[in-house]
View 1 (cartoon, rainbow, N blue to C red):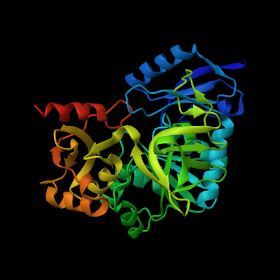
View 2: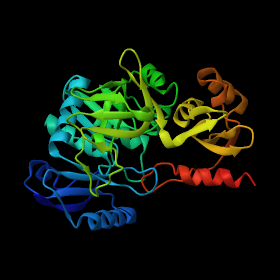
View 3: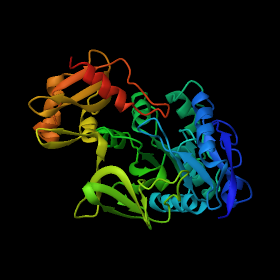
Amino acid sequence: MDTRDLLPVVVDASAADPVPGLHAALTGAGPALLPVPADAHGEAMAAQLMSSCGGVVPADTAVVVPTSGSTGEPKGVRIGAAALEYSATATHAALGGPGQWLLAMSPARIAGLTVLVRARAAGVAPVALNSLGGFRADAFADALAAMDPAVRRYTALVPTQLIRLLDAGVALGGLDAILLGGGPIPVGLPERAAAAGVRVVRTYGMTETCGGCVYDGLPLRGVRMMIGVGGLIRITGPLLARGYLSADPQSGFNGAWFTSSDLGHIDGAGVLHVHGRADDVVISGGVNVAAQAVEAVLAGDPAVTEAVVVGRADPEWGQRVVAVLTVTGQGPDTTALRAAVTARLGAPHAPREFVVLDTLPRLPSGKVDRAALRTLVRGAES
């Protein structure tokens, strides 16, 4: 088997060259890249992944991107140049044409890396957000003002970022589209953005599919999706990754299809509806409660800043639905929250208990540490 060297690179989203060597990696003129953040976690992750492969990868690998990881143990996803370039072309086709991109997320993650690949495909230099001190609405506004109004303008955000920008009154109408993904989208957020003159495109995908590959429920050109055994979403198409650094017979890469860990259904119009991760389902009174669906309703309340739903043992219901929240001010009316969930999803989905925290525990990837929350909630049983 032909191989090529794998080179860890520290990324800097605000640098002139956020991922050094990316062009050479995509053209085959240089080693494959392992982009990592400039912190202790990034250093440890690079050492772990390099050790797992001996510093070499199959020749069809251009980059290795760690999954965001819900367990704290990210896998290195091997992605080829053709898949990344196809993803960029298909994205531009779906959005109405190439344009300039604003980089608002770390290129050590697939959402940020694909922004750079799209910029390269468009032939228009991206504008990078000054990330000093974390994501700031004023820094985003400055970056937006630096974009070229003569071309189409795009960015990719997670829901929390968009909420902060709307709360700060940042004028986003100059953007031709915002790709929104990376987590549950609060009920009412796309409508709020639309009222502010913003075109939001809801995306679904994962590192293994070069990021978002389903836009507003419909697959990008050349992408196919289906619902597999147990209700799991399956994806295939030219933007599929090559596999993981370490072979895993239990991985989602089986044949030409990738089987995700997400539950969903496809309606009669061919639109995908994502219910959440299979391991986040709470079974209460014999009803499968999708945590993500409940979280989206809860997060639609203006007094809720973040919402995570977990299960807790219950002698009557098997599990009770518990909502862990961070809030603003005096917090929300929990009776009204229960009523909102009941009206939208049905009574079995309504939280029977609410826990308010100052902050939520997080994994090094930045995602909420659900395992830690489950342990916290179980500890409250005694």
